[in-house]
Length: 317
Ligand code: UDP
Image 1: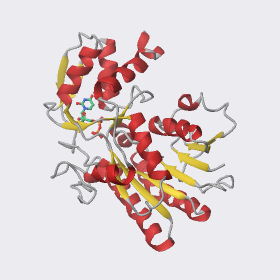
Image 2: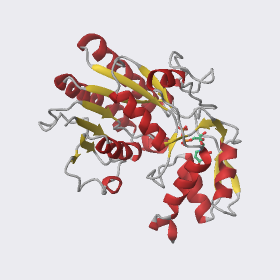
Image 3: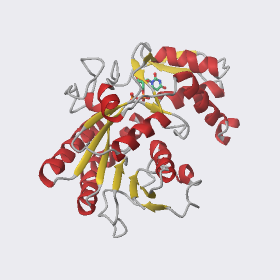
């Protein structure tokens, strides 16, 4: 049996990835510090004999059980703007020392290493859509730099392991992803708008709401990650993963209010510092190298996500 290590495996994307890997016949070790991940996200997996949970921080020295590993998905890092602003040093350490520790496990096991990078490496992009060869427009001393520069450093580390130690590294630049199991308080736009709409509270649009994001449903993202990890011949590649259809934030607010049958008013709030104006992946490379093609449209994806939030006890009060 092939064994996969998923760091950040109790997080939003990680928990879905763990399940898909089990379905594909992998033994799965899920490692999470639970700083932003939740045990609840994996409670349906813990009975599975091929699943193991280790509560540990990737910045700590690797443990002896991290042997006989064929594939590593390194997803461990705070990832929402609210989370990384709350944990800036932890974010920087996870993306430097933490990534180094995980690369060392990959090297020792001759395992494939998939690094979860981010569209944030493009910063506030001056070109759209963003292709992998775009260098980005990042403020190195801004409020988001712990994440943006952390992830850029992580990519640099990955490539030096690939170039100098022949580690089988692949980098996924993950664009905005949404779906069930996002934390209702993680501060990102979709959980914010859905919880506000369901509770009849004002829906908070930052700025004019004319900034765009391209939202990918979680199952599509997980398929892309799986392909990136499982296919041969991809070592050293950086690949955008996301849904290429941009939406204005105001449009998303209106859509969610309507789908939730909500009477919430839409209110304007200050735009956070360094909030990118646009974000849209060019997924040509993912299409040609992975056969990646997102299938879940925004209406269906939002319906499933709203259903999940409706069933949360906290939102039923
Ligand atoms: N946003 C918003 N209202 C909210 C939360 C976010 O208008 O309650 C905006 C935010 O300013 C950004 C976009 O929605 O322009 C996406 O924000 P998110 O935090 O989800 O992710 P980002 O793409 O900025 O990392």
